[in-house]
Length: 425
Ligand SMILES: Nc1ncnc2c1ncn2[C@@H]1O[C@H](COP(=O)(O)OP(=O)(O)OP(=O)(O)O)[C@@H](O)[C@H]1O
Image 1 (cartoon, rainbow, N blue to C red):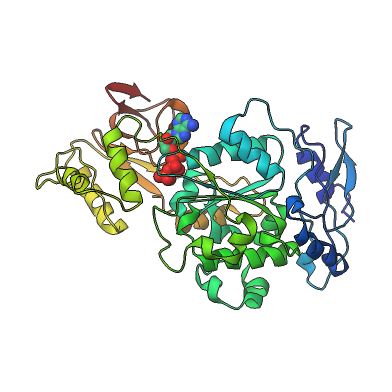
Image 2: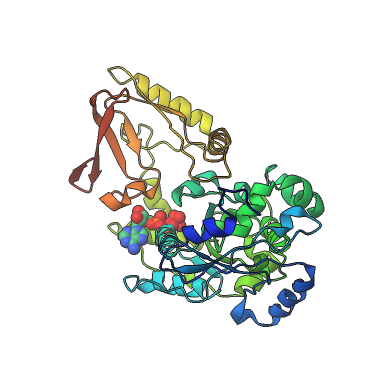
C-alpha cells in the first residue's frame, strides 16, 4: 500500500519505461519458485528465467498500459522481496546501428553474455559506450562499470567494487560469503543489482578470477537464480594480453566465466589508435604477443633521451611524483593560476550528494581542485570530446582564459593539435 499522494514503485517504473519498450516484466518470487530457475540451467539459449511474481499493468499519462515491477510478499530477508528487473523479450533495435555494435546489441538483448576483446586501440571502449547508449535508448537499465576508477571514468560508470557494494574493496572477495551478503553489501547496492537488466564491465582483464567468482555468487544470491551472474546478462570487455590482474589469476579462469562465455568472444581487429603510424603499430602488436624483434627494441631505444624535449610526456608509476612534476612545471610558467573546482551532481535516488562525492573522490581519483596557467599542457583523459573529433589521449595547451558575464569561474580555451591541424575548443 502506498501512502496517498505517493506513487508505487510499479507506477514509477511504468512511467520511466520509454514508449519504445513494450514492457518491463515483474520478476519476484519466493523460494518455491527457485526450482524453476535451477531447471533453466539446462537451457542456456534462453538463459534468463522470470522468477514469478506479478507483473502489474500500470497506465501512464499517455494511457498506454505497461507492465512494471511489483513486490510479491515479504520473505525472511526483507530485501529479498525487492523486484528484479528482467529483459523484455521484444526489444526493437534501431535500424541505424550496424556492424559489431548491432551484433553485440542483438546478442545481449537475446540474453547471451558477450566477451569483447581485441588489441589496444581497436575500439573496445568506444564500442562499449555505443552499445550502452543504444541499449539505454531502447529503454533497458544498464549498469556500467570499469575494473578501476580510470577505466570506469572512460565508460561513465563506477568501479565494480562500488557497484556491487564491496565496500571493503578486495577484502570482501576473501571474507566469508554469508558475511558479505548479510553485513557488507548495503541494501542500495542490492537494489542496484536487482534493477539492472544488463551489466557492462570494461577493462575486465585486470580483474581477478576470485573477484569474478565472488560477483557471480553474490548475483546468484541477490537474483535468487542459479544461472551465471544470477541470469543477469553481461558484456565484459578487455584484452588479456595487455595487463594482468595485480593480484590473483586471470578472470577467464573463474568457473563463472566458462559458464557464461565458454570459449566465445567477439574480437575487434580494426586499429584506430595508431592508424597513422603503421611502424609503431606493428611494434606494439608484436610486443603484445611477446614476439618483438631486436629491431623493435632498437627502434624503441632511439626514443630514449638524456634531455627530453619540453613537450615530452612523463610517465610515473605513482600519483605523488606525478603531482609533484605537474606542480613543478606549472610553477615555471608565467602568469597567475586559474583554479577550477569540481562540481558533483547526483542523478540517482539512492545516493546523497555527500556519499556520491566520497565515492567519486575515492573511486575515480580525479582531482577536486585543478590549477592551470596559460601555456599549461593538458591531456584529454577520456573519450568525452570524441564527438568533437578529439580522441582520448590528445594533448593540448591552455592559450587563454575568458571571464564570462557574472560567472566566477572563467571559461578557458584549448588548442589541440591533431596532425598538422590545430583544433580550437
Ligand atoms: N569506430 C570508431 N570510429 C572512430 N574512432 C574510433 C572507433 N573506435 C575507436 N575509435 C577511436 O580509437 C581510439 C581507441 O579506441 P578505444 O579506446 O575504444 O580502444 P580500446 O580497444 O578500448 O583500447 P585499449 O585496449 O587500449 O583500452 C579512441 O580514440 C577512439 O575514439
